[in-house]
Length: 104
Image 1: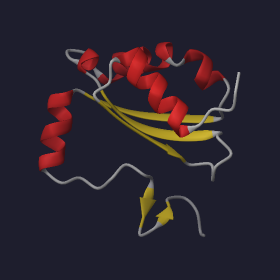
Image 2 (image 1 turned 90 degrees about the vertical axis):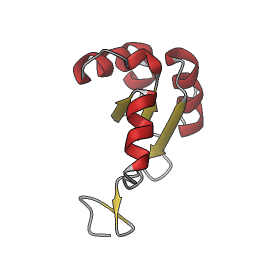
Image 3 (image 1 turned 30 degrees about the vertical axis):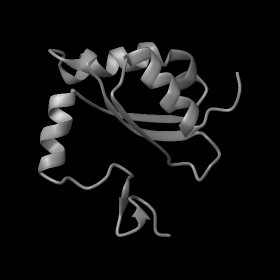
């Protein structure tokens, strides 16, 4: 399998989960081993958080097996629009320009 990239994950997620919005952030500094994501898909409708994550993990089984760390935030289109209206900060794992949990 080729190196996993944010772009390849975005494409795969969009295709396999019929996602309407996908954000993928490489948290590993470009080495492709740790990703965090926001996935907006109508397929999450009526599913609790655990079932949403199981759906994502099943859809990305091969990709997740070849990376070190994977985090997904799963929302329906309605949840995403509602949350955008409340102006939540971007999902990039940073606070004040620094990744949480680091001293850099």
